[in-house]
Length: 308
Image (spheres, rainbow, N blue to C red):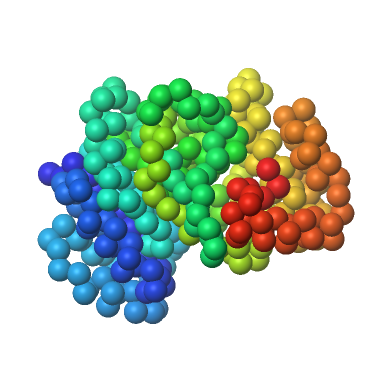
């Protein structure tokens, strides 16, 4: 049995999947199985995969159900004790699995492991920003303390013992946007995160998808499932309020007053900085101008976040 099961959901990523697979097969740690889940691709993705001849690759094809559905499909078929994911347009540095293996050996009593990643724009590359101080090259952190800026759990740069999914559950496919955040919250409530500060993966920043993505209230991350818990868990409450703030800002720019009111209703302003409180009160046309300007700064590497 391989040490790692690597799961790659694939849907119409013919222009990216080749480089992604190469970055996996070129890992210095080689004891892994690679499960590629073709989630109803209609482009040349399948042909790109078949061009690789490696007995570690296991190819599956299913009807389109979304990335989380494909990840769950892979979890069910994974044979290893340690499961990791890689999106079809992301990139691992050759040391990722090796570093994760060493981290698992060092923190053998833990179940959830993650590493830092960097963000690539059209003109620059910079590290993700986290809300914790670096105390060691690898440290055990509380998910909510560490994720007030960028989440320390990112789908393409984390490893989970399979027992985590048995106890917490898998990705909630009834949520069309925010399934990963929903899972991270559930994991963070029960597990500490072993975080390695060494940059091990790269996320390709797509400003177009960020600015065009639509919020669907009935299919978005449902905070109601955490309603009781957040009343007695201040860290969870703060984390959820930061997400409510982000959703309220996006809803306002889309002209969805109902969503704005919904997210603001249960948001405690004390959990927001003065800057965020001001932004929350601005009209949509000003927010759109600020967003366009900040996206330009992000592309140039002069800013590392949007409305944070």
